[in-house]
Image 1 (cartoon, helix red, strand yellow):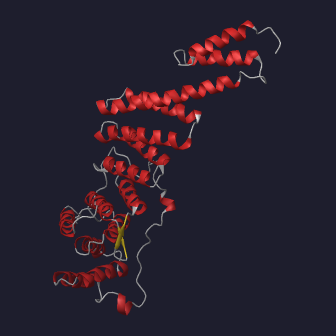
Image 2: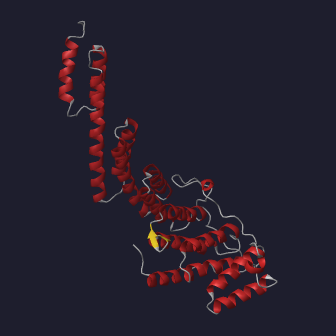
Image 3: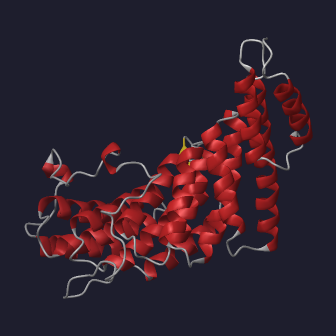
Length: 347
């Protein structure tokens, strides 16, 4: 749903309040004892498969696009003056020119932050704002309030999801780019409080892409990483839905069915709501019936003119050991008696 532009602007402004306030001391990354981006996140796109932001360099035709002042301090003051005067386009270009011309100056991370804030708060350009905040974390992680910037990136990703992508005045769902934005935040701040909810969103977006196997991986990883969080319970239920969807899509596959039955039995032993438990039981009954039906067909395969009686007997006995209360049990027992009674006879 597209947000009202006035409400969106207000939300964007609120986001900036919580954003990075630079201090003399370096910013901090997530605290001790948490997972870091070097850990695996199955179901995410590989960082190597995504175009990574390159370090900014001075633009061509510097007399037009370059800084207007001769040093970073004066350039930063001039950009602030443009911003105070309400000329946000000029201020944005001035901050960007500073970062490109003097990337190691103390003003550079301040300018990069200001550039991202203008894109978010004034231009409401969420995709570009997200890219600039990401650049800030990637290239100035020590010089900024890392956690605050990461939280702002998460909120911008939320705005990206709500607003969609504008192409020639039309808005479209931008599922892949939005999902990658959430993934980028999680990878850069895996210890943050918003990560479980972000992972739920990533898995949901994977489903929107019809990448159900990847969605299962994200739900499963979320449960493993945050077993005590409320999102883990939601992930368990969502994973069950997706697993059943995969069974429906791909038909019978013995290993997939066996894995799904095991998952559902474990889910029923978990601390879930009554509604969830009813769903898990229904799905287990459906999956077990499918498994039993296919096992019955497999056993019947050996009871044919091209097979020996001993092969059929072994197959039926194995079926009864695995499914003693099956709806097919009486039929198979009767057939076993018949086969055993004639086992010594030739075919």
